[in-house]
Image (cartoon, rainbow, N blue to C red; front, side):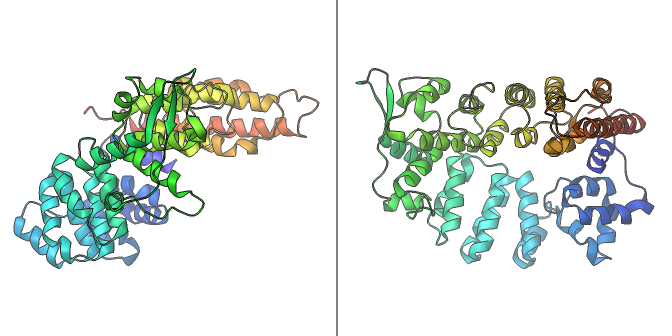
Length: 431
């Protein structure tokens, strides 16, 4: 309940009473997921207290949005001094703060000392450029492709591939399209693949490791890296003007379909492309519960995260209606809270079906825990009908009905408590 209470209190503009700050900081120390909201509610006094108690030093490294603490960035001389003399954590915090406000200044600050930084520090600093990433960052990232650290080179290449108009993205598109083509000589138009036979120096410079990870074939590894780094608008042009959904539906020769579609999945997530995500997810009621490229629930969850919250909830609701709850836990985790009406109803209906089937409720304990936190409190009314002991089928697990009634009672009690909590806090502030 505490994460939701903190979020609701912050939305309504509350501040924690001074006497409760030690308890709030202790709670945030024990649970990292509470820290952003707890520090926002605690306000500046939490930082003052953190300087007096080593147990609360985490507050000096984080802000209310979960990022590094934000030093002042308005004084150029102070910024340069802190960048040159500060501890590593202070420099990371400074770069992140500056990047969120003046991206170009942050990049210029980093470029000024880049050659003298340690490899592990360069990697962390480079990662800060994800905030506000844009075309102006391309020249610096192109230089980073020549870095002596393989991890730095790979990160620079990943960032450049997220810029569809970058030179690296163009080079990757040229290489990828040389490997993937349409074969119109077959009865059905088919995608054919000729994976790279070698990883040349240019590919290595652009962040592709010549040695594949354990368990992966080299050629399939190189192909996947090329395809995931190419702009997705490459493929309609290459494959006859087809839409993403039509491309995903095409057969792929010689067992390359899984590798090709998995690479498109990674590209859709990296480039935040909802059209490709929809195509790769497919219809939630499909027998395999997703497009052929969605090779795992984790992959589907990442694709769903690129969609708007209402569309995400609708897709997961359709998945649950067809496939039940046994594989839905990861998908539910990417849905906005409280769950939208159709999603909440789908979860409740699926729990009711599981109860009627006579299985034990602890098989669904993860979903029940999510439901306590994520169901709209208004669903408590619908759940009241499930509190009675059901008639158990002959093949039911012994005593399952009683356990279900107890589980639903706990769920209803929690939802009612959340409703009271929100009512007492009052409506959120108008933006």
